[in-house]
Length: 102
Image (cartoon, rainbow, N blue to C red; front, side, top):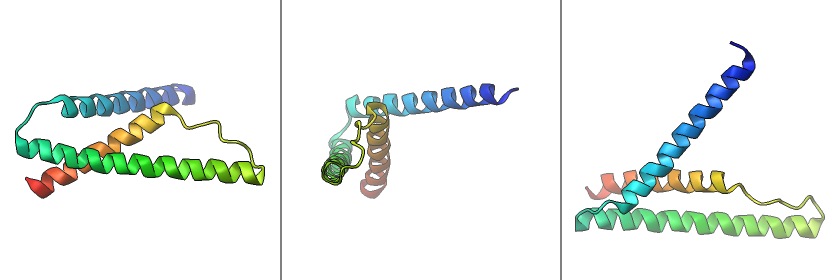
């Protein structure tokens, strides 16, 4: 096996893992459950929303700093990486609140 084939296999594995995490996040949001599970889900969503807002505020501050200092302008963040990060934060917080309130 050449080095390029290993790189392609690792890349495809990462894509499959990240897509399965995104799909499981969407499934967990859409699934109907009892009131306790809905409460846990809403706590996880609130925490995830707070993390996303904090991340976006930091990005705005960094962009303002870069533009004032004349550094290279940020071309923006990758939406795929951003979505993957949000899904990871949501699933981890869902697991945390499930253990805390279950």
